[in-house]
Amino acid sequence: MIRLYVNIDHVATIRQQRGTRYPDPVAAAVMCELAGADGITVHLREDRRHIQDRDVRVLRETVRGVLNLEMAATDEMLDIARQVKPDFCTLVPENRQERTTEGGLAVAPGGTLERVVHALVDAGIGVSLFIDPEPRVVEASARLGGVGTVELHTGDYCLAPPRSPEMLRQLQRLEMAARAAADAGLRLGAGHGLDYANLAPVAGLPGLEELNIGHGLVARAVLIGMHGAVEELRVIIDRQGG
View (cartoon, rainbow, N blue to C red):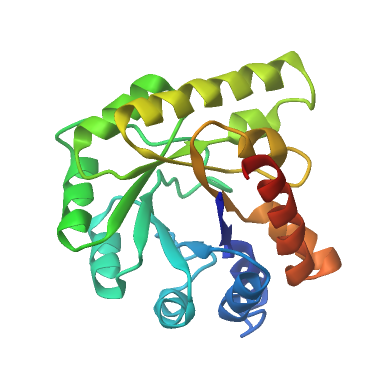
């Protein structure tokens, strides 16, 4: 069964917009898990635009499934991860000017990324890399050592017009990268921009084990409630992924 990790960043976005105590992302995480989510994802950004340090600490104490901490490969974030001990960390690129993560990591040996990967592994924390869906990047991720999972960036697929040749081309890119992950012995995840309309083909990728979905789900939850929004996604995933 494909695992669904719900990214609750944008529950915190609404809270931070007014500087209130609500809506509480911790309460949202509880509702997501009760509705069938297998875990919770949060991105603690360097600029703290949505999720805050306290959120991460409280989530570590309350999430019953998997807690996935998305973070930049920096010493500050490494220190926080060592203190909080999430189940795993997904290393992502980060740009202060971006609205959301715009692409995958530049994966190369011998730099900060490799150092942070090995430091997380030494701390007993699993490591995932958020990468563009290219076999060469998958292979570079495997060569770093210590990386257990690659999460394929689905943004280009999601931006393509529905049922267009470009959408098919992007889906084929994802399929090729998925096969490369299997060949490299890496677990496979996918995420970014996924929603109810475009999810099914991605959920059918060969070897897919986990999906990270946030903005599309939270937007849906505004209209029908968090429980119903998670249940709808769970139905699509289970139908495609078995």
